[in-house]
Image (cartoon, rainbow, N blue to C red; front, side, top):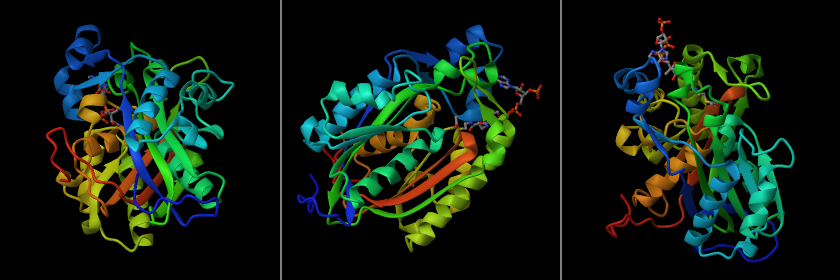
Length: 330
Ligand code: ACO
């Protein structure tokens, strides 16, 4: 648990991440497997998207439960100590009730639970909602999960989307703290572009990929810059940039325009594809598991997606991470 985590019910000034976890379906689909059944090539997929393989399968609730349990273990908390669950997903198991209800029950959490749908920006929106609940004194320890099974919305015969999207879940525990955790936020949406990426009930996703790509780079850079300015930080102050994992070319272009070198960028899209709401917490958990974060590091999270919705958060990391070899920090 981080130093300074508050214990009272008074409105605490901040909230920090004290645990993280991830879950991926066992089934891995490689580009070679897609090449065998679609009019595509490994070379096209890698060159255009940077994706080499992706995990497919499971349900949002089963993946969210696994990721959530791992985050609780990492934070050394009993499930009953959690007093709010926020689940970011755009592929809920059912239309009603919210998938967070089943996850809350399976994990044995206390307090309330709700879903957030802001597509690939969902985890950032959920983080802001969780921070708001903590600041308002409505919750003290929040389990925050981003989980999506985007393969369910993807026409397996549509080469323009089937190669990109995948399934997974990432989770963090956010605890009230005397330490300032979330430093700044920038959220936005351009609903006039809502038809660029859509999926009707019971149907498959359609996407104007080129236009989404064009907007994604500009939006990511603009909202990340706004959040940095509000935090009174520059890109040089950012120890880790965790962008939404849609396409390596979008990530590289955004990082380059922001002025953050790729060594300080979290990338999992090559191994995991685009997992929508799960992609930012999966990339964050991957970096934390690799021991890339130290106490006091500034971390920039940026998401964009269907809507078109976007959001960036600058947060201060509060727990040391240790990689598999026992090495601390990056
Ligand atoms: N294999 C081979 N050829 C393909 C494939 C494929 N899998 N998919 C499309 N093509 C073809 C197209 O049909 C097109 O052929 P044409 O020129 O004969 O018409 C050609 O490749 C070029 O297609 P483009 O769409 O121009 O390729 P582009 O370089 O733009 O890359 C991509 C496509 C990867 C989809 C890119 O535009 C992209 O990543 N866009 C952003 C997508 C994204 O981020 N979506 C997520 C938003 S977040 C959310 O909320 C879910």
